Image (spheres, rainbow, N blue to C red):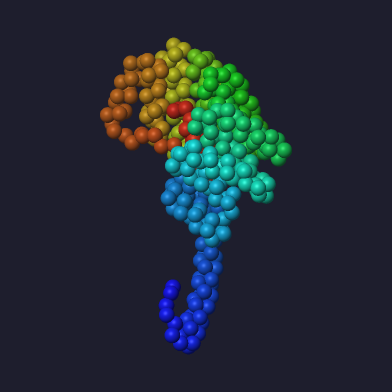
Length: 342
């Protein structure tokens, strides 16, 4: 601010006022930081899906006032663009920027999770080579830190990449390895999150099997798949509605497998159970079941369900919650168990 200062007294008065104001602003800034201390990395991560605009503003503020490091800011920006805005290319760029930060070694847990995020995001962009590259680096760290959960998450993405380029049996074998790891993990941590991961892998494996007309494989895995869902449904959801998503995926996949195998009664039973779910993912699962099965009764069920005008539009976690409220989410096959978590 420029003013004409005509006297020494005025100069002195302005100087004193400026010093006082600066001290007051500094005190206010400190007070604000303390008051907003709860709006830290964990808080912003928690609203990355539901309040993306607010999250982005808070990240920018955190970078400016120094309450958030560049790594944390880029990590969170990657989550917001992945989870809520679904700009996977931009999300991947932020994840890579965080990984390339010279201080990344100071954040070992975030570094491991960033490889998981980047791998999933590159997969969602259709860049399978880069996705596999990130997954390989992440798995190396997972082995070093004995992080079995991260290993299973990265294997999911690796399996999906192989499936996308037509290596279905390689994908199925990868999902089997993932199932083995998660099953072992459940002996130590039989929580909702781990059961949801297992349901997700079962759905990915079933999708891959259906894509190559291996319907018997889907039916043979039904007992273990159903047992997993029974456990999942008895546990409190970490994300509201997630269990319905998992159930819808199961019934959709089984209805297709049974119908294609000639067991129309079981297909009809599974399809009726699918209609009973109230998940936003149900419409896509229902339509896929009808088109894949070619069953007139199922197709009539689709038409009836659509006439009811139920709100079944697609709304995905998350998850990988869904892993996005906790870690990351990206688009899967329409009837996969649910959003993958980052």
